[in-house]
Image (cartoon, rainbow, N blue to C red; front, side, top):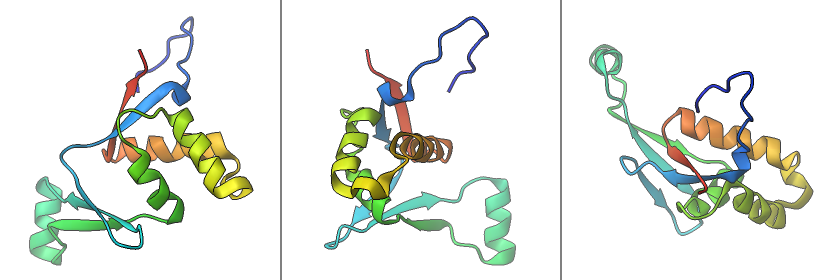
Length: 120
């Protein structure tokens, strides 16, 4: 996300719409467990593959809440919309809901699992 200048109003992250990175492949098994496949590209990763036998593709297994959230990321629902569904599903176990969900989305964006766009 862009840095906020001193006199600018900060955007509300809940107004953003997440969408899966179309370069990633993910699967959902019969039990609803999500696996995201990430290619380990780049010079450092190539060296690690050759020297340390690291895999070319890593499999990322999401936790229970991540398994619930991943299919909701459809490019249509905002972070706020997803938060309401998470609250409905997990109740008090999701608290602190908004801070936790925003942090989760920021982490997913940082690792390029998702892209965020502002609601028009």
